[in-house]
Image (cartoon, rainbow, N blue to C red; front, side):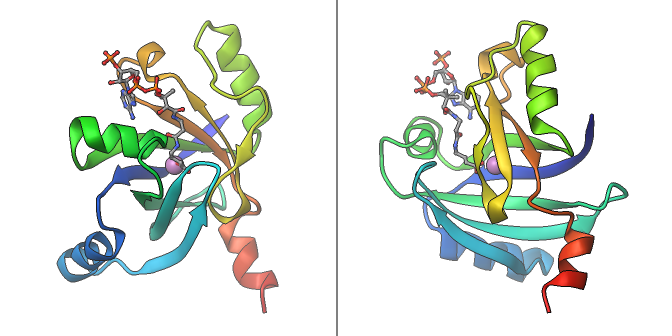
Length: 150
Ligand code: CMX
Ligand code: CO
């Protein structure tokens, strides 16, 4: 079951400048940064709020690490902006299988590794009314993280 907006993915040319815009304009601070070479992105997660399912909602700011990556190609065509939305679930495997049964293309046979050790997959935007849609199962709920990572 999809229980939250996990994140909104926003493509940008310059991650540092975009992070600074979100900090200066809204007061959002960086919660986590990483490079995901498989996805071809350098990213910053800005935590917006915790959610009732034990997770959280983020903005995911994405700078491509190479031109032929998904975000690199998208930026070249569209310029900066909202690239995808991501729904959070405790069971990405089960939800992806159920959605595939409905005739929506799921891009990966097995979920891959996303931000902060999460497991992710994507639904094809052409099957989702033009919206690239990601499904995410967090490595562990953020409420657990604060209690165990000391
Ligand atoms: N939102 C909506 N439509 C999109 C899109 C997006 N983000 N990306 C591509 N499209 C559309 C294109 O506009 C194009 O439409 P037209 O044929 O009408 O012009 C069509 O999809 C095909 O696009 P393309 O530029 O030829 O790109 P590809 O088919 O090579 O790749 C996709 C598209 C969705 C398969 C690829 O972007 C992908 O695999 N995405 C999943 C991985 C990803 O996005 N990783 C980065 C984020 C990582 C993270 O969130 O952690
Ligand atoms: Co994402």
